[in-house]
Image (cartoon, rainbow, N blue to C red):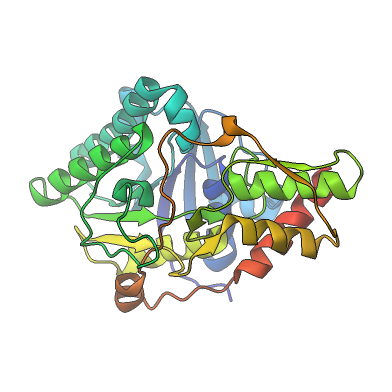
Length: 325
């Protein structure tokens, strides 16, 4: 159902996995929406129909360019800013810790400062990560927003720093900020540098006879997987109903072992006796054996409910790679 709510959004990192799905969600849901998208590369989304292009304006450039960013935010007359621009791979952060830390932190600070100095104070969604919790003592028990943070990798440290800055801007500068700690999200169009998408791609390659086995990291880890289409809906609910200065777990509240996910992928693809091989290079130096989030606060404040069960997400991811390959 298309709503007539009028609002102006800025999505940073719009050409990425989550950015694309959020853009698609907004265009489908709101009739009078205006969206500004920023990224270093131009988006190539098939869903950007001619009828929707008057709702979406893309600007190509670096968010590390303070003057360019401040000028755009000042003239746009924004209601909402959603910051999705970051290095989001933990594996990448292990290889490039300094670059990841500086990039992710500086991007957020540039956005927050530009918004603070603009006449219209847009509501900002500061997107964080479940990685901020670090190695949890009892991973099968859902962690709440009150759980102590203990980041255990460079990416997580940068996210905690962003959250600390968010608290400063919300508390001291009175900026309308809402924070998330988002758990693992999956779905079609995700890059194969992420575990579930990488497994799905390889399963399709086995099905097509392009490889004889699936190569993987640690399949015994347990994660809380949420479909990206549920994630972006939760983000929009938080912008409209979340409480300023509050942090929210964005998750499904359910844990799944990666081995079971691979078995589900193989079954859905019609593959029996799938051959697998563990690659030590795909195992992180330090990793949580299990982490599951509590989404009780998110549900209480916004009415959020997941709409995509894991089985549907995996089916859609396989269909995506089937078309790509």
